Length: 256
Image 1 (spheres, rainbow, N blue to C red):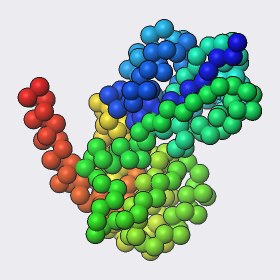
Image 2: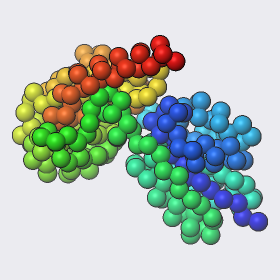
Image 3: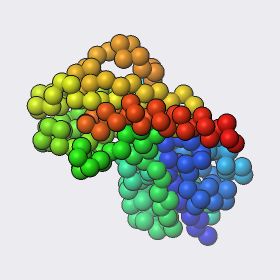
C-alpha cells in the first residue's frame, strides 16, 4: 500500500509560527526529511518519526535534489507517512514544485501545507511593512543565489518604486547592491539585513543601499547565518516600529 507525502512549510524558524496543520502532519509522521534551516525545536514536534537531514547549505555537505526526490518516492511506496519539511514555504524558493511533480508522476499521494515565508515574516518582525500607503504599493521577492536572474529582475525596476526583498542574499550582497545602484537607485535608499529572523539569535543591521557593498565585518553581521535583504523607503519605518515592537514584547513578557 502506498503511503503519503506532505510538503510542509516550517516557517522562518520559531515553532510558534507553524500552522496547526503543520503540527498535525509532524505528529503523525513516520519519517521527516528536513532542510538545513529548520529549527531543531520543530523536529521535536515529530516524536515518533525518523528525522533525516537532506539540507543544502553553501560550502557544506549537500544532498542532491534528485536524491531527495527518489527518497520521497521510495519511502512513500513503503506505506509510510512522510513529511518533507522546508524552511519558510515549500513553494517559495523551496523547490516544492519540483518535488510535487515528481510525486505526481510516480503516482504518490501528496498534499501541501503552506508555511510563513521569511520574505514577509522577517521584515514584519523588524517593524517593516513591505507595503505602506505613500511609500510602497508593490513588492518584489527574488533570490540572491542566482546573480544573473536577480540582475534581470532588479535592473528592470523603476528606482524607489517597489520594496525589494532578496532571500539567500549573504554571499552576493555587495553585487546585488551594485546592480541597484547602477540602475539609478539613490545611494541613501534605506536598506536592512535581517539574519535568523524569529530565532533567539535574530540580528538586524540598518543602513543604506551604498553601505550594503561593505564587507560583512564592517556591517557587524553574523558569519554563516542566513541573510535576507530589504531595500526601499519602508525600511525607514523600522527604527520606530521595530523599537515599539520590542517595547511591547517586554511588556507582554512582564504581564505574562
